Image (cartoon, rainbow, N blue to C red; front, top):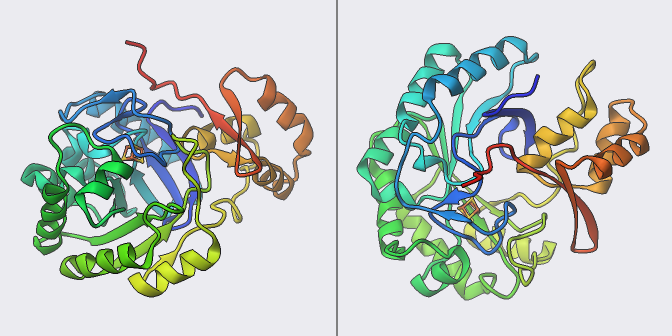
Length: 316
Ligand code: SF4
């Protein structure tokens, strides 16, 4: 079944088998991170809106939950931009709670943690995973490229305030490590001190393994990830999301790959491995992907990636 707002379940290195909800038109965000795998932000905004009717999103979710077996490990509110820009985020989380006991995660860039209304919405989630890539204003602007008026200090204070408020679930923080930009021991140590003020339940370090918005962005190697892990006391995430994932019986593999590749560009070898694990000859499917106008093929770090177009991309 193809949905507009619901996708997956997709494999997630942090959340297992995760059913995604995208409440934001494609690339609508309050940042334009240099490493973003969705490309540059073409609709920057700091204004929260009900971009799509809440009832339409819930209608799709109800239907998806009836058909997906086994149930996903998490429902993730992610979006193809920044999900806290969805004005009815709190209502959405509360309505999901009425529908199912599956835990709800929100993956955010953390900018709007400086807004008490957003914090109140997020406090309803089981997990809030926020990114935090830099310990200084200069590095924050270089990496995250926020909309005008967003300051590092406000984001830092927002994160600290959220960590101290009464809330339902856990706070996880993730740092994206970029070669030659934020991977020095001094930067990592500063970030560690800052995170001590926050006291997150878990800290992750990751590095871009998919084509980034800017071609000069490079991933760090495994030694640097291990060094960061040591300094931050964190868990490494680099590696494949897709190792345990298969195409469900009776489902068109192109539909499954479209759903994944809209949010998670896949390396060609990952596509081939996934299809083989599912008992499907990969090469006819790869030929179909190359001929399908929804797909785009890109080279990054010596590998070939498959990316899918999202129908929620704005046309204005
Ligand atoms: S990585 Fe997230 S926060 Fe950064 S530009 Fe992309 S969608 Fe926005």
